[in-house]
Every structure is written in structure tokens, then in C-alpha cells.
Image 1 (tube, rainbow, N blue to C red):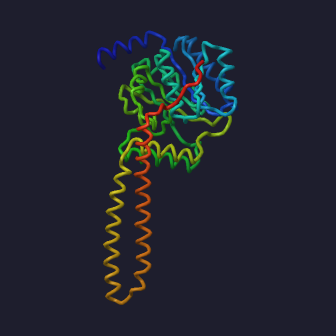
Image 2 (cartoon, helix red, strand yellow; image 1 turned 60 degrees about the horizontal axis):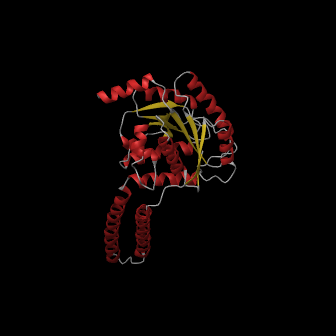
Image 3 (cartoon, rainbow, N blue to C red; image 1 turned 120 degrees about the vertical axis):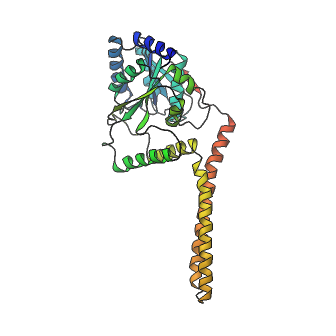
Length: 329
């Protein structure tokens, strides 16, 4: 540990840090009040124990909800302006952009660290004690990692494991069984603010920041209320977003598929010559059709993969803002 890091760690250990709890929300009217009660109790306990500063806050980010989520956030803010804050995005921009907006707001308001978590209370709030302890000991980023996936369905458990393995195989860095439940110091948030890409995938970006990191293992609970905002369709889209945002290996598959197609074509050519020599020309018709379908399929898949990257280049080239904040409490 460098002298600067040692001094920084001593300062953290001697003081109570200002911690912001950042929670993206989308159509959370059914469970948001309960979430606020649980977090309020937790924050009060941490403040009373001098674990965190009395300036710590809970920041809800409304990602363009279509129900009464923002009204609940306003009501919470009016009941306790010191504790509850809110950010309302002008339009639904997705979980990652909403989370980024909340983190940057917390950074701008001078927090020492921000803890991001989902609004459904599936993340164990008691794990934040260890988050903060590790932060005060010098860690800049603390990851919340699920200790087990026993409560997941067989399909979700195995597809999640497959995603992390594929992501790692493609050369991208990620933390297995970690979602977006993490603590980031102000220094780490400064580093994150320098990433300007439109196609955000924070689970892949944060591990690339460097700094001292640690993991806190916890057991993920059941959703308290409402429905999951990540059905199968969105999960697949999110996985593709992560893979295409951090790896160019799918593009190399196009070359591999082309080479395989050539080998198949050579094999089919040899088969056709053998068929002609034996006067079995009718048999070659089926092989020809199979070859046409195979080549056509490879071309379509290849064009689809290239199209994904071209589409991302197109979106990045526009330099559009990730989000537009309509109101801040």
C-alpha cells in the first residue's frame, strides 16, 4: 500500500463517511414504501452507531415510470428531506442508464461512497455493514456477490452460469454472480464518469477501473412486491448488450464460419464427383440443397453479428446524452 493510500485509509477509519444509497426504480409503487422503511431503519442504525455520517442519503432514481412511483418518492422526500432524495428521468432509459444517473448525482453532491442496489429488496441490506467496513479499510470498490443460487429456477441458474463463462471466454472481465449491488468510492465514481459510451454495461465497466476491490457474499432473497422487471426477453437482450459491448470475438466467428463453410463445400464437391462416378446423380440433389441452406444460414448469422456492431457504432456516433434529468429533489 502506498503512503497516499495509507493516509486515505486512516482518514476513512477515523471519520464517518457520507454514504449514498442509489436505487433505480421503474414502476415500483407496490413495494417502494416498504423498501424506504427498511432502508430508513438501516441508515438510522448506521448513523446512530457512527458507522456513517448523518449527511448520508437514500437516492431514488425514477426511470420514467408510468405509475405513481415518482409521487411516492416526492412524498418520502417531503416527509424527510434530509434522508430521501430523488432524481426523475424525463424518459425511460433502462436500468443501467438510470443507475449511472444516480451514481453521478451522488458524486456531484459530494458523497464519500455510493452503494447501488435494486429497489425490490432482494439484495440483503445487512451486507452494507461489511461493504462500509471494507471501504473504511481502504477498498475503493466492494462487490456484493451471491453466495448461492438455490432460489433460482434451474433454467435461470444454468443460463446465468453459462453467461459468465461465455463472457470470460470472450476476454471480458466480470465478477461471477455479481449484479449491480456494490459500493463505489468517490474516486471510483470519478473514474467511472470518464466512460462516455452510450451502450452501458456497468458490470463489465466497473471491473476495468482498477483500484483496491473486495467481495462481500450474501444470500439473495425473494422479491418483496411487484413483478420482476427482467423477463426472459430483457435478460437475453441484456446479455447480448454485455457481450457485444466488451468483446469483438463474435466478429471472429464470422471468419470461422466462413472457413467451415468452405470445408463443407469441398467435402460436398468430393461427394458430387463420387456420385457422378457411380451414376448416382439424384442423391446429389439433397446434398446441394443442404449446402445452400447451410451457406445461407451462415451468411444471415454473419450479417446479424456484423449488424449488431454496426448498430452500436451508429448509436455511439450520434453522441446523444444517455439520459435527461427532468427533476431533482
